Image 1 (cartoon, rainbow, N blue to C red):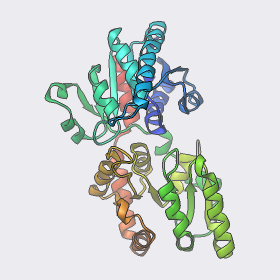
Image 2 (tube, rainbow, N blue to C red; image 1 turned 120 degrees about the vertical axis):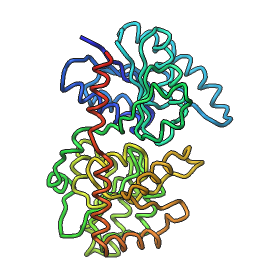
Image 3 (spheres, rainbow, N blue to C red; image 1 turned 180 degrees about the vertical axis):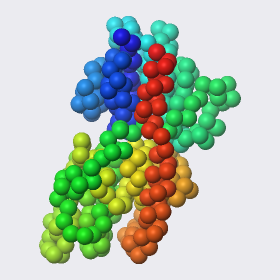
Length: 371
C-alpha cells in the first residue's frame, strides 16, 4: 500500500484543510496516512481525532523580525529536522504533503534530503513565509487562488496547480436542522453566527459585548468565543439576561464548536468572522454571506486583509477594517442587510459560487495520481 505523510500545524487553519484531504483518502482506503506536527500544541488532538497516526517534532517559529526567541527556535528547527529524518526513514512514504505553518519546514527539508517528493499547498491569497521556504523543496505547488501564482518566480510557474482551498466534505452536505437543535434555536429571527477562528478573537468578542442588545433584538446570535475567552461569553449572556431578560434566549455562547460546526454553519443566515482561509472557505462551502473583520498588518502578515478583499470583490462579503470595526458601523451594516434581504441572498449565492468543485477531493485525487 502507498504511503503519504502529511505535515503542517500551529493553528487549526493549517490542520483542518489537511484533514479534509486525508478524509477523502481514508474513504477510498487506498493509501496509508501519517502526520508530522508540533509536539507542543493542539496539533496532536486534532489529527488523532481524525484517525491519523501522529508524530510530534520540536517546532520553532519563523519570524520576520528580530527576537531573542529566534535564537532558541533555531535549535528547535534543527531538532525538528533531525526528528523528521528519523520519522521519514521509518515510514518510507511515497510523498510528503505540506499544509504549511512553521512546523512544516523541517519535514519538507528532510524529505528533500531523502529524495521523497514534496507537495505543498498554500491556503491564503499570498504565500506565507513557510510556503516560500517549502517551495525550494517542492515538486508541486498547490494554491487556492489563480492570482496567487503571480507571487512566485517564473522558474516555479510550471510546478503550480490551482486547486482551491480544501474544506471537509461535511460542510457541503450539512444538516441545518441538526445545527438548530444543537444551538437550541427558537423563534423566527435570522441566525447570526459569530466566530474568530479556532482560538477566538478578542476584538470580535468585545464588539459583540458592546452591541449585544441590538444583535439580540434583530438576530438569534450564536457566538464561538474561543476557549480562552469562555468567561467573556458567559458575561455577555449574564449582562443580556440582566438588562433585557426578554431577549436572553437569543444568545448562545460556545467556547469551541467541534464536530457540530458544519451543521451550525448550515443553520446560519449570516456569518461574522475573521478572514482566515479556513473560516471563509468553510462558509463558502456552506453558501453563507459574510461580514469580515480581518486581522490588520502587525497582528498578522496581512493575509487576512487579502482574503477579505477577494471575497468582497466577488460579492460574497462586506468588510470592516480595523477603524470601521466599531459598534455604530457594525449595526449600520447589519441593519442594511436586514432591510435588504435581496442583497443578503445575492451575497449567499456569490459565496456558494466561490466554493466551486470540492478542492479536498481534487487534491486527494492529485496525490493518488502522484504516488
